[in-house]
Structures are given as C-alpha cells and as structure tokens.
Length: 206
Ligand code: ITT
Image 1 (tube, protein in one colour):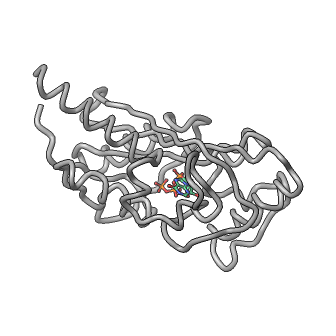
Image 2 (cartoon, protein in one colour; image 1 turned 60 degrees about the horizontal axis):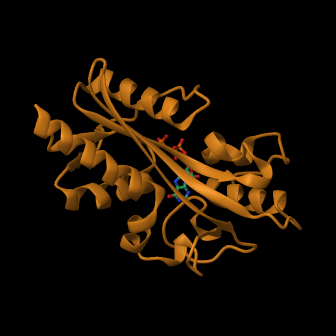
Image 3 (cartoon, helix red, strand yellow; image 1 turned 180 degrees about the horizontal axis):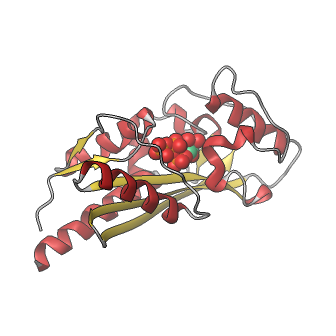
C-alpha cells in the first residue's frame, strides 16, 4: 500500500491548517474538499464521530479520507464539553451563551463560568483520527494531552479552547505557543504521528 495524498474531512479551516502542518513534513499531502459535506455526528464517542465524517466524505469523493474528531475533557464537569466541544455554548447545561464575538469565545466564556471557584481544573484534549481507505478498510489512531484550565484566556494563536489550556509541564497556554511547539505535544500531533507509523507498517507488510 502506498499513500501519498489524503482528503481531509473537515469544515474547520483552523483544524485543517494544523493537520496540514503536521502531515506535510511527514510526506503526506493534504487535499481540501472542493465543497462542504453535511455529516450528522450522532455517535457519543470521538472515534465514532471521526468514522462517520471519514466515511461520509469518502462516499462523496472516493479517495482516501482522513477525519479528526476531537475535544476537551474537563474532569470537574465530565462529560462536558467532551464530544460537544465545538457547540458547548449552545447546550442548555450550564446555561446557553450567544456565539459572540465568535463560537470559540462563547465556548471559553461558558467553560470558565462552569469552573468558577472550582479547585479541580484538570483537563485533557483528545483527538481521534480515522483514515478511510476503502469500503471496510480503515486505520484509526488516538492521541491525548493532559493539562489544566486557566482562570483567564491568554494568547491568540491556535483555535478553540487553546487560550485557556496549559499542557502538563508548561507554564503557557497552547495559544501562546508557536504552531510547531503545540504540534509536538498536542493530541492531534500525537494521533497523526501514530497514524503515519501505522500506515508505514501496512506499507511494509503489503
Ligand atoms: P469538523 O467536525 O468539521 O472537523 P469541528 O470543529 O466541528 O470541525 P469537532 O466536531 O471535532 O470539529 O470539534 C472539535 C472542537 O474541539 C473544536 O471546535 C474545538 O472547540 C475543540 N478542539 C479540538 N481540538 C482543539 C485544539 O487543538 N485546540 C483547541 N480546541 C480544540
């Protein structure tokens, strides 16, 4: 099996940018879908939703397709934001927020309110990756990074909850790190590097 190009099944440009930055140096070209495809992410696990995204895009474009389903797990309010991370602000639980000035900022505002006066601020980011090669032929990989939630946002790089997440062993948020510094230790960096190892193993055995 030889794999040089993958389509990325995502409509989040910041996530796509990260996947590109991680995979390009590893020799895999990332293709952007020419149009958005609606996917119903009904699974209650990251890997289940990654499978649904990869399969749906594969069925439209018929080329090897990679999807990332990811989110932030916060121990004090488990299972939130979890698999609901991208639309946490809209959920009734902990009170709805308006998506202003952006969805990311509304999610952060809501999480900081939910953790107000809470001592336990431990959290982890999880990324589940599914590479859909052909009907019934998939490779899956997961990565995580542990850390804690700050009390105020810091930094303007990255996306999502990056301004309030400090990884274990560091004293700055993901949003204060250069992209490559984040990718070295991030859930997505770890999951994608592991995926490439699995692809190489398959290439050796075929
Ligand atoms: P696609 O499904 O189209 O890929 P999405 O953003 O909706 O885009 P997910 O359903 O996987 O993707 O939700 C992931 C959410 O988790 C994302 O919107 C962020 O809020 C959060 N998240 C995931 N990875 C993150 C990271 O590296 N930094 C900050 N937040 C992250």
